[in-house]
Structures are given as C-alpha cells and as structure tokens.
Length: 314
Ligand SMILES: [Zn+2]
Image (cartoon, rainbow, N blue to C red; front, side, top):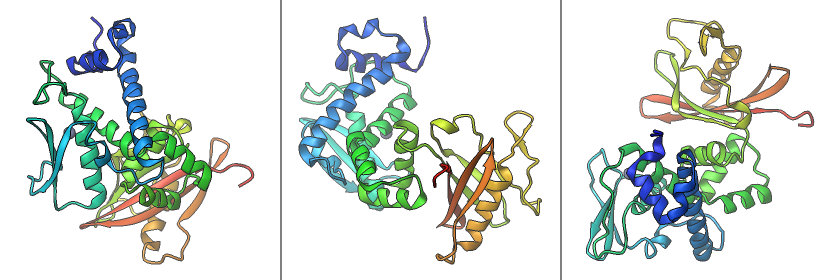
C-alpha cells in the first residue's frame, strides 16, 4: 500500500467529511491538498461574512461555527501555548495569559484548527478515528491558523492596493496590519501562497561572533527553490567572511560571502536607523538585493534577511 502523510487515519476521516465518498478516487498524495482547499474555502466564506475582508481578522468570530463556548486565559505550562478541551456542548480554549497579543491570536486560530479533527455532532465533540501522527495534526492546525489570520483573498487585495513589494519594511507593515508575527506572515506569503517571490530567513548572531541560520525560518519563493542557505554563516574561529564553507554537497556556496557581509553590516548598523540596510550582489547573471535587520532577542541577536532579484527597471 502507498505510504504517505495522507494515509494517516485522521486525514482519511477529514477526507470523508470534507470531500465525501469520492475521496477514494483521488491519489493519496492529492488528498491533503484537496482537504486543505475545501476547508480553506469554507473558512474564507465565513471570514468574509464576519469581516467584510478587512484586516485584522479575529479568530473569535469563528467560535460559534466551530462550537467553541469560551476562551480562557490561564497560566499554562511552558510547553503549551494553547489547549482545546472538549466539554458538554462544545469546546473550551485555554491560552497562555503571559504571551504577546500576536502569539495569543495565533494560538486561538491554531486551536480552532484542531476542532476539524472532531465530530461536532455529539453532545461532547468526539474523535472517531483511532490514531493520528502528532505532526500531521499539528501541521494541519498551523496551516488553518494561517488561513484564518491571513486569508488569501484579503492578502491578494492588500498587496495589489497598497503595492507591498517584497521588503523588510513591507513585511513589518503587513505583520502590523494583520496583527500576526513576521514568521507566520513569511510562511503564508512566500511558502504557501507564492505571493512574494523572494527568500527570507533568520540568523542568530552569538556573542562570540558565530552566525547561524535558523533552518526552520527559511521561506523560499518559487525562483529560490534550489538555493541553499548554509547553517553556519560565520564560524567564531574565522575572522573574515569565508566563501569556502560547503554549499550543498561538496560544493562551494557562491553567495555566502554576500550573506555574511550583509548580516555583518546589519549588526553594525543596527543602532543607527539612518544607515542603509540593503546591499546588492550578482549571481547567475542576475542582480539581487539583500536586506538584513537585527532584532534583539534575549542574550542572542536575531537577524532577519530578505533576498530578491532586482528587475532591470528598478
Ligand atoms: Zn496544536
């Protein structure tokens, strides 16, 4: 039997509920995308109904449709940002009270994502499949959270109307407009909807000068699928940026020195907002711009970088 993510019993159950009995005609690999499309359509309709398409979108507006009785802010353990608790008549959502507003909003939308794994008809919502792989459900709930907070139709309209082209300024403005974190926005704009063709990633600059890429933060647009951002940009033992660290398998990374110098520049310019945070480099016959900015995070410095191809006219 073909083994894929979509052979998970929870996905089979979702397919029966949202596609109907004809789901068995679909290739198993197409199952998850088909379910996502159906539920996205359902959520977009509801959101437009409640919001008239204007950000920010409030996940609370979906409570009635998803049988959520109440949201409670509580002191949850550090391993939990939110919890979905089935009770008589629906669900309770608990979220951590000590988190920032954007994180709380994401947690609520994420817990709404979990409600899709329950049959809402019984008095107490019930799961009717036997087992599920943890990450199948978590990935799905994260995806649903993105759909709720950043609906595609609204994002497309906003990008068109306001001419938000890929830049760190646009990213910050959009994150504020939709009241989401920049991480959630990057995933949705670049990875899922391909609305921005650019490459975004975060780096951590340690106190000894080592610069490491946070691999979970890399969002690659369509033209950047083959690009590899090295895990280690600068080793503490290397004084000057090196272009000789391995890139992919036994290859040299030709853009590493540009990345390192942009991030180094961003570090030194971080205290002076007037200084330019953008530089250019040539690669494969094209000119690219790279923009890096520092965001202080506890003891480590976190830096976000955006790479995009410069069009001949710009
Ligand atoms: Zn979860």
